[in-house]
Amino acid sequence: MGAAALAQALQNLGVATAQPAEGATILIVDDDAEIRALHGDLVRTHFPDCRILLAANGRQALDLLEGGERPLFVLLDLMMPELDGFGALEAIQRNAQLRDTPVIVLTAQRLSDEDLARLNRGVGAILQKGVFSTDETLAQIERALARNRRLGSEPQRLVRRAMAYMHAHYAQELTRGELAQVVGLSERHLARSFAAEMGLSPMEYLNRYRIAQARRLLDESDASIAQVMEAVGFGDSSYFARIFRREVGMSPRAYRGRRDAPRPPRP
Image 1 (cartoon, rainbow, N blue to C red):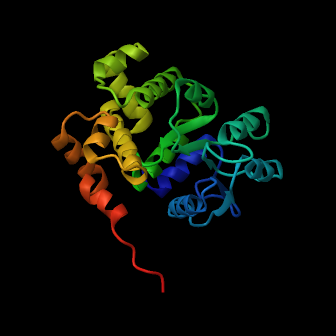
Image 2 (cartoon, rainbow, N blue to C red):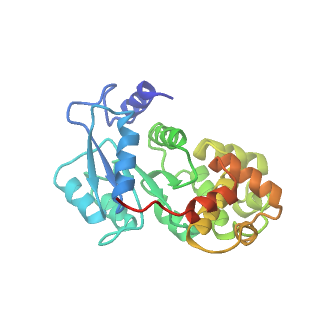
Image 3 (cartoon, rainbow, N blue to C red):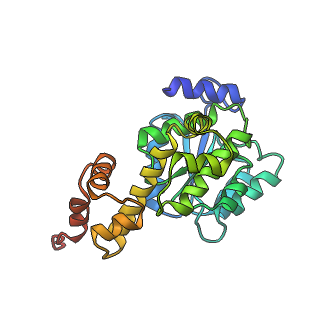
């Protein structure tokens, strides 16, 4: 779906015309200035005429919303100072004038079953940072906006429950059958629901989540590549290397080498 289709999806939701009205805004909420700028560039490709609003925490976001801003949608981080994304979302849901604002969560936080239950109300999509490419993130935003406000549906809740289980148990061996049993669906039904919600199969999502955790460990720890592989749930080194290269574009060793390479002195 391209820009025109996304605009049409917004029209179907009743939050925009086919072309966003003059002065239309999109609100990006993240405490990392680089991430705010990155997400601003991302949505600007689809909405070049929209004004991008930036907030460094939930309190700033609420000040903008309560001050009269009515964005087409909000991209919301969860881990932020002063007021986190959970608190901001709860405040939005309590406000009758704001609760219909589409919200897409973009977070690096490992979400528990309880976390995802808190996000079932009012959140069109939950995207893990590092799991989706730029194009896939845009597609997820489009998909969330095109759901015609069927938020909190039973398939959505079950998919998010499967996500929470993967977040908690990704370091262990997981099978499609185990995931399906956890949420009480057949493997086929879970795969179909997961694809509709996330654009991926459950096992594709699991592998990407594992690779995102592997990248974090390679960046932040001195664990060996073999230790990282085991810590994120891969039992075969060649398979780990193949999936890592497919998702990251280089081998785990080359990725670690970038961190350890000497940096040129500043002029």
